[in-house]
Image (cartoon, rainbow, N blue to C red):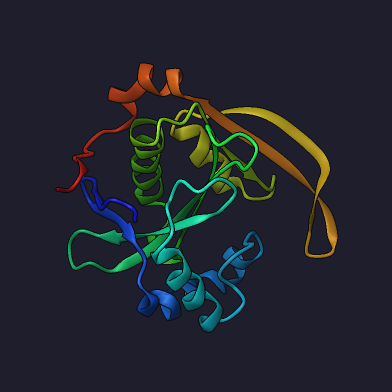
Length: 194
């Protein structure tokens, strides 16, 4: 179970099966779906996945764990973020984040990702966290830079995605880099809720 984490405007917490229709609606948006590997199949697939991870350990090597991003005021689900400790090296984790279109460009993604990074480095003790981004996803590239991640690689036609080879840009951050910049990168975070 994921610990509920509050920031200045958001709460990150476990998803509920009833969130399935909302997730499906924003994941299917054309500007979002083109970059998605998850959440575009059907409401039933999303709800089954949410039920399956409800009993899972978030730090299971090789398994994605998805959490909801909710507004503190009113509790509306505005997005989701996921992480996956690597199977062969669980001290490293991959992250991904999706926001509903109407909540983009308001700083919510950076606020949520900073909270997730605090959890991954502080609570789970990860050594390195990285994100894999399609070069066409300029908003995600900017987001990863904004939270302090650095570009490590631009892999050319290295990812098979929806019947075509795609480029893949890797951004990463080390635990010691996060510690050095923690006060700058986590404004307003109040940490896990008791």
